[in-house]
Length: 115
Length: 107
Image (cartoon, rainbow over all chains, first blue to last red; front, side, top):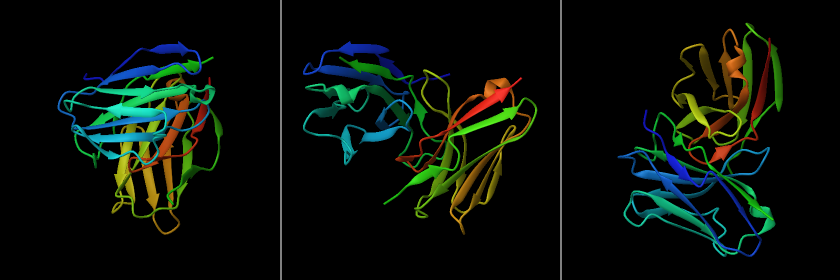
């Protein structure tokens, strides 16, 4: 079964440092999403890509967060500088189309701890 | 703005019983609604979805009901099993998730 790959699985970083997460969606999925899930809460959408273009980044804290999907395949989410409040699970999901009727396929996430 | 919430943060059921997880939403413009299951340390996993022009959809051991009049969504799990223990989220389209309902299944 096809999976969304994410790495690293866990990341510990000091505040004010830069950190990056990588996501490889399911082959053929044009739509890619990054979510942040704080412990005990539901996932919050940070950014949505359609191919290589950002179509929704309204909830992305753009002063410190950036995301790219240069070739419309894999994607990187970066935080610089990291803050203590950024500690969370960062989930990547993909779908064949933005209005996928079978929901999105999520990766296992990157657990970020900022110390 | 959009908001989707769950009525109960925690639900405990006996193995073999049926479970019902509820969700209220405020944005009726969503084209579809999705239920996800999230186990500890994993990403959400699609369970079932329902289009906004439907009021019921059945899957394997799961049924989703949509009441657009009162903007309510529910997930029914038949013969709940220990493997069903997880956090369940409802979603309206791509962006709205409640805090989730944690389902405990007692053996």
